[in-house]
Length: 80
Image (cartoon, rainbow, N blue to C red):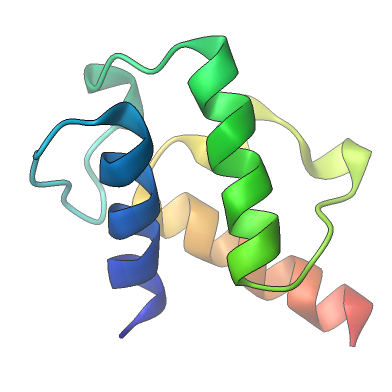
């Protein structure tokens, strides 16, 4: 399973909607409450075995699947 597929699975499972999410589709088109966003963040950290630094918790890093993939890559590089 690719990183993108894992992210799609996390997001759709938590928001409880079966939606197709393109790599560059703005996630703000999917209504995600702040609580669900925190749960998604926790799942990303758990699934990818990383801790996203506070200074990276910027909404710009969570705009699309691709921006989240880039964030994961940066954090994994820093933490390795």
